[in-house]
Image (cartoon, rainbow, N blue to C red; front, side, top):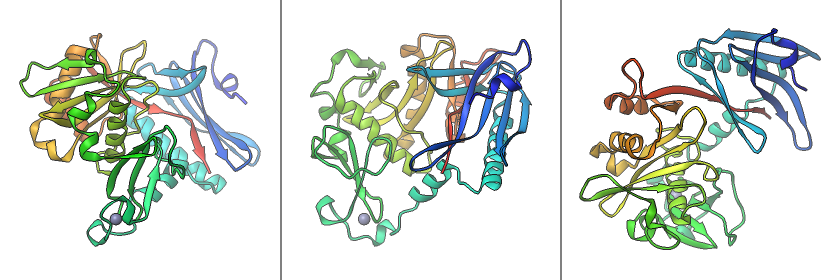
Length: 336
Ligand SMILES: [Zn+2]
């Protein structure tokens, strides 16, 4: 049921209605909606069979939505409304949990996946066949099946130590997966190399449906990033682009973005632990803006403090018309 028609005023344009659902095994119940118009965001939830307005917030900047195959993917709230909307979302989730006794899906996932049961230093695992393995698919869901032509991320089930990835039932270690030799062979297209004017560094622009090897390296990096303090959302290879930074003979880091009419949306930025001292993050973003972006400005989705520092260091967040504009992405909310 769409609630937008009941809450919007005349002359107010609907940008999108975000569903709030309670997902059970066999059916889904509508718990509420977040209605986003060109000037307001309204949080609504159901309690004892009636709809209640939790909060309504007047927006200073106009939000925009991303649809894919006719379905709402995300709504982007630009600054300066980010902090207030982010706080309202948190409060809204708490209210829905308190009213209905259900749990927000992301909280359940995060609590379950972040801490390994065994400290890696105490674990006796050495290689994949010696121990219990945790096999995850590209969305970080548990996956039981091997031998398919699909990406599988493999780590120790006890300590989360990362071994590598499987594809077509074959394991590839991290060293191989991140080596330039490996990435530049197979179904790689030389046209995707971006020169950075440096002697021992260049980048690879990976488009959706590009080289499987590069895609797997980025998928693996995004899994590693998700397990570190640098919180990065999952890389969606079906529609996101990636720029991989190759330093010497291996991948040092990457960033991802997706296209939108309003400008590209930078979604992830990650540099591997062993390359953190090299200032790669700043080089990566400035080169991406310079050589790959075709617009004056871009959006940066939910910057972490580290990401904000990187964009500030290259002056992208400053001035009268900053190159980067921060946005908060809101996606359909699931409770379970
Ligand atoms: Zn282990």
